[in-house]
Image (tube, rainbow, N blue to C red):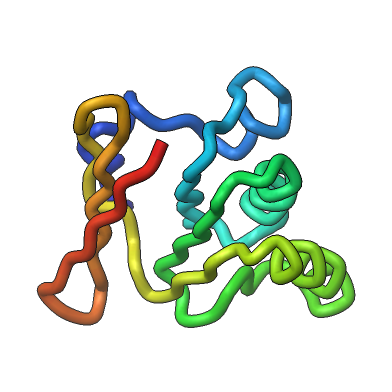
Length: 119
């Protein structure tokens, strides 16, 4: 079992977004470790506000636990909203940088990292 990323206290869950407990900002990174409906629902809700959304998953394919008939409506909405889909990357850490958060992504396939600056 993987440990929680450093800076986990700076992030919220998809369920926090879906419940309305947390209001998303304008540049949002969603980490989908489960590959199921929660990340897609949160992305759809956030994208509908006009926010820029990127969904990142460590899986080789997008939302493997969501079957095709269920995936189609999500993909229609998310593509229409210009959501970015990034596969084979996982969240390594999150740290504050001014009023934003710097997320560091790593790969299970090599010693490489990428960073994203988000709200």
